[in-house]
Each structure stands twice: as C-alpha cells, then as structure tokens.
Image (tube, rainbow, N blue to C red; front, side):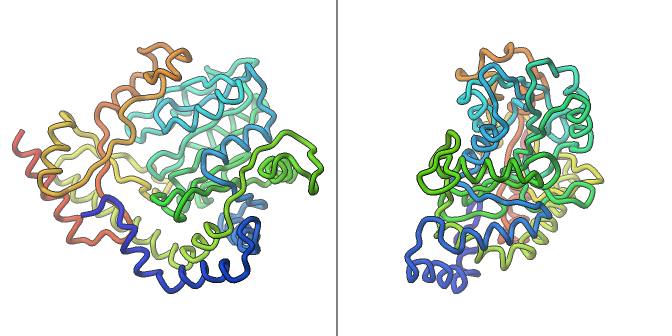
Length: 365
C-alpha cells in the first residue's frame, strides 16, 4: 500500500497531463511560458485572491514573501516550532529571528491566544502554519496583527483547498504561501509553489523578486532570486485542477471516515474546528510508544510517517531561538504524532486495512 498514491492519480489524469505537457514541449517556452499566466489566473480566481504569483517551491514562496515585506536583520517573526524547517529557515536566512509560540495540543496549529504576549517592537509579522491541512484561527491572528501594524503570512503548504469561515486558505490574510510539492493536496511533478495576496504593491514586489529583482528585462529594481516556477510544472498543475474538486471531496470523505472509525477505537485524533475544513495534507493521529506502533504497522505492509519528530527549537540550527523546555505542547506532539496513508485515491478497502492493523496493534499493548 503506498503512503500517497501518486501512480493512481496519474493513471486517472494521464491523458490530460500528457496533453498539457506535450503542448509545452511543442511551443518550447519552458520558462515563463503561457501556462504560467494561465495557472496564476486560475488559482487567483479559485482562491478569491486578487493576485497569484507562481514560484519555484513552497520554500521559495516564503522567502520571496519575506523579502517583499522587507524583513531586515534583527526583525522578529512569530511562528510555530511544530512545522517543517522551511518556515523558520527563510526567516533566519534573511537575518530575522523566529519567535516560537506554542501550539494548540488538539489541532497542532499555532495557539492564537499566546501570540499577542510575544509581540515586541521588533516584530515584523506573524506566520501561522496551516498544519496537516487545517488553518489556524486566522481571525484572531489578523486582529492581533491589525492592533500592532503587522503582516500575517499564512504558511499554507499543506492546506490548499481548505476553508476558514467559508473563505479559502491562501486568501485569509496579508499574504499566503503554498507548495505544489508532489505529495501536497495539489501537487506538480517536481518543485513548485505560489504566493497569494490582495495587495498590489506586495504582488508587484513578489513578481520582481522571483526574476532577480527585475521590473523590466535587465532593469534590476530590487534584490531578487531565481524563483520562477517552470512552465512544465505549471502545465501539470493545470491538468490536475480538472479533478481537484473531486479530490477535495474524497479527502473530506476519507478524513471523516478515518475520524469516525478511529474514534470508535479510542484513538486520539486531531480536532477540526467547526468553522474550518481540513484537506488532510496528512492524516495524523496521536499514539504512545510510536516506534512500536510503526514497526507493527510496517510488518503488516502499512506505511507511516512522522510529521514532525522534533520541534524546531530542538533542532541544532534553531536551538538558540528558544529554550529546550519552551513550547511543551509542541514537544509532546512531536513525540506522539503519526501520519497514516492518505490521498484522494485511497480506497475504503485500503483504509479498512489501515484501521484494522492499527486496532490490532493497540489491542496488543
């Protein structure tokens, strides 16, 4: 059983993907070809954002966003320690300082009730991570930001397609960043990402930064990077958009089924807040004695993953930004989270196998 079934997805979309990629091979515009603009217009319309800027990866989206916001050395960005390293990595790369605030123990998202106490005169932005496919409490975070004149950057690498109070992830704050890494809810066949905003000034800055700071060819208005998304990758995402609504419905249905079946077994599951939907970028539960559980599932052919085994302030590269005993909920979650097979092409029969294997493992405790 695959952890994420990209082969089944390709089989279902083969004709569309092949045709889209062949069109690029025929016109030969591999960098900034017409599919780039087409995808940006489609994604902006889909999210409701005014502007979409495709970029080379989700990591590059964060970097370009922070550069567009003019993050300076010593500036602080409040964020979660329970996330992939890229969230803090881009802050530190620009000379900024990540300020780690603990998570809600039941959602694993940034705890908005703790954020305002972390604001200082050096705070530049708040960067919540929409972990596992569900957004943080964006209204509360936006309100804090408004009181202090801050930007809110949604790291939505795992949540494209999710909603918060009816609005779509990536269009919930000053700026949103997502990833099209192959395993994401909407993925390409390599690296890719996008930035979304309603702010025309920020959008123009992002467009210039992704092409080495050029406002026109060989006119370098600002410092930039080589951050474009390849035309071929845009073509793949365009093809996958044709089935994306169906995939979201499947993710919601499979996530709800996992929640019900595992709830009947007494497995501790992530909470999904009533005003939000989750696209289950990963389907994650909490277990004790995780190595034993993983080994038992692996013995039955059930793959698992851990997102993430260490909070960032326990990683050598970021340990200086918080004490080891800070953010206890993040520390505890890192010890217990376990992600199970999940994709739109997971069958109910496969899901039953996962649930039955986990049930047998828990009974043997």
